[in-house]
Length: 339
Ligand code: 1CP
Image (cartoon, rainbow, N blue to C red; front, side, top):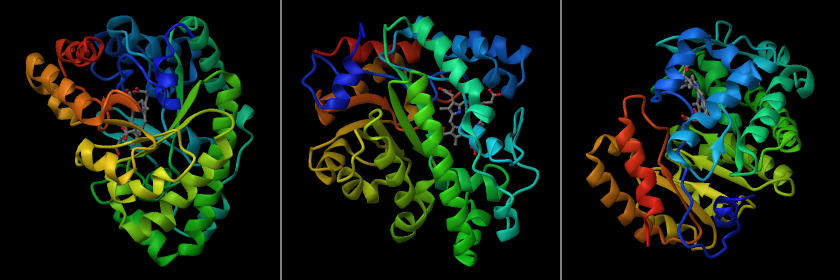
């Protein structure tokens, strides 16, 4: 690997500067992505290796991040499990037949990965060729809890109340579903590593919707199963939005790194994790709307606060679609200029 900063930071090695990438960097705010979006619907973009790989490398060409993340979506997993998922423009995910009882859970399958998600593996192979060993490629999956949120709620939500109600009133069915998602995700991520991804990240975007006790039961238990199953295949990054309350326990797992959002200071995140694990984050994505000069100051301070080692510069959640390109450039350049 010509630029192995990201892999070295995941191992906790001493580096000249920390590596940088941005969650959801492939898509949304890039004019060259919007041009592709106008021609092809969402799942066509995911299922066509030439499109998925092109979208993956677009931000790298423009800004030179230290890692690429494969263009895809966390919801290809429920789709492969026999649950219909639509992506509605200007609305987001829509699942017309949400899961609401044991009978629905029984109809969910643990699929053959090659048969249902072989197109992802093809996209990985094409992308690896395009990247030409310049930088590592990240593969990802949603956490079982975050996937359950969509499967039961049927769409995005501010509260995911139906998903939580399902867990709290039908816990046996909920755990059977969570285990099916976990088994599928483990097989999927193992195939992705075989196809060529260098690192995997688990997005627990809605973990912070749960209380600390419920988080253990419905989310962390399953994420940890995935970490244990994957740890010898590739480094695993666990990102839990709003999950600062679980950081101490997460730091005792075999994850290579933990992603943190912007509601925690670098100092407290380091304290909770005993300075023993690589951390990734955590600029407020909305801060990329600040003037470029201000962004550079914030990034420099963030690196100083986390420390340059055992650290991966990132946002605290995905980049917003309305961020100006110059501001993204300021974010990346500030890291590269760090002394
Ligand atoms: O047509 C479109 O382009 C729709 C927008 C879009 C895009 C660009 C969606 C729909 N998904 C994606 C790609 C995507 N999704 C990536 C690819 C790499 C990248 O963009 O860098 C990744 C990593 C995801 C992951 C994802 N999808 C998450 C986890 C990360 C996060 O942001 O929390 C979640 C929760 C989703 C669900 C999803 N897919 C799409 C939307 C609009 C949403 C969120 C809906 C909601 O708020 O509930």
